[in-house]
Length: 244
Image (cartoon, rainbow, N blue to C red):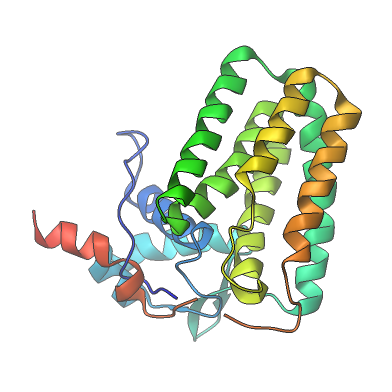
């Protein structure tokens, strides 16, 4: 269970990032880490206080997230984190299967020693996070593993679509997963990566299908669950700002 105040800031990726880029990344990461519950109201005023920026900047970040369908902007009522219905969850998983298989095929075709080494290091980070009990970081790295595969595939439209369905899947898992297991096994990631490195497209696509089946099998598409208090989810940012 979490809320908006617990988010520890991640390193800014580039000094050229705008303020709304930074806000966008923090909220996106909070969704990937399942620290933002589906249905959480995203108050522009509260987020502006947390990040120390104007409501205009918050509005731009929320609009970007709405384009990825992880935030819903309701006229005259503000923004909320999306809460996919059971039917929407099934549709999102069906779409993810299509895009993941396309990504996997292209990843096999376009993998390089450098890209394989980078993603293998990410798998090791993911394993270490779960081993030390840092489930939020482990879950985020699980999602980023799939985004890195899409980057390896070297297809920008596929990457953009993958980014949306991975974050939507994280919301579905927060809402419907049975128990609190790591939904994305780093062992399966290692197996999948080995298949990609082997150059065997059929094997890699088979392993991806098995992996997605295992993720979906852990869901109870009748159920409910994360936190809705913005100040709790983003507490790390608030503390950092007060300590300046």
